[in-house]
Length: 119
Ligand SMILES: [Zn+2]
Image 1 (cartoon, rainbow, N blue to C red):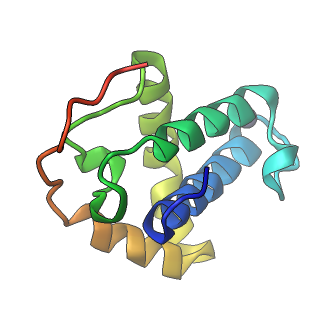
Image 2 (cartoon, rainbow, N blue to C red):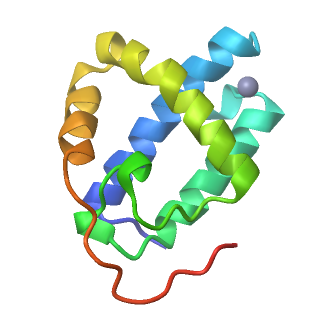
């Protein structure tokens, strides 16, 4: 399954956020995604799958603004925690990604074209 450029960037953003979070909370040497702790790499894999199924594709807002909220409850809680922690920190390490994320977060999510199932 290949991701659209928009979703690929989203995946990059969430990957960086999980790396920052994991390195500071779980003392993992997370320089690459595969150095994440088991918990965080599991979360990232889940996020990747949800992105691959996102019906908004190119018009996707950031997940925080999304009308669907397709994550399971516990995954959503973890996502919030990670983004709240890593969002501001990402600005210094990855200003371009952070900027794009900010721009995306100002978009309104379009009406979903079909019903999206929670998994
Ligand atoms: Zn971790």
